[in-house]
Image (cartoon, rainbow, N blue to C red):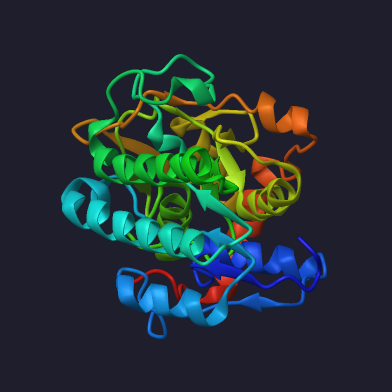
Length: 313
């Protein structure tokens, strides 16, 4: 990308999209296009096609998506599949039709099988069954990355797919039921501290392991890959480190300085037992993460406090 290339960031108000915009600005890119949902509904094919015909972006970062935690995914699978399929297909297809030089599609580590060997290599995709609690979202993301690959193979496009682990950081969603595990814990422990509660109850038994990546590190990787990678193969982007959910709750409680008891509701689902990604491919390309988990949680909690809970609804 040149510094004056026309770059469209889809989903710029979300956690990932806003981080990509920050990173592009930091690196001196000056021609960034953004549209709010009110200005452009990415689920509407005609509107998306008209936007691409008018704007003709050179590069596209596709960070727009309908996202949520276990409760949201389990209770609204049809919505998660429909919205994400429409967003992906509309944007990717319109980018190809309008000769976009390159597109980066953002997926998720949940695309990998529930019981995939650990750490998960890119080639483990579609080798066995998905985790049922987020199957609809995962299937939609798999369709998106496959469509990028098929366009590359059939028409010579240069569309790449990036798979991050659990993300967190500025502009996260701290909703009590619809957020992912780390922001949900930040809100829960903060409220328990403020309200003087003696205990906090968390879902499951704390045994699953998860990998986390600070969202600004992902944004840095996305710009790096847009400039340094082309190919049909999906690229895992993560820290290569994992922590148990029990260990994570203790770490969040420590950062927030909550000293009460942590209880576990084992009637609730754990989700996938382990999700650690093999990041050797992106490391070999020359990229590694920068933000350690405890430092990232401190930054995320600072953002939570400064935002005044604006993303809690």
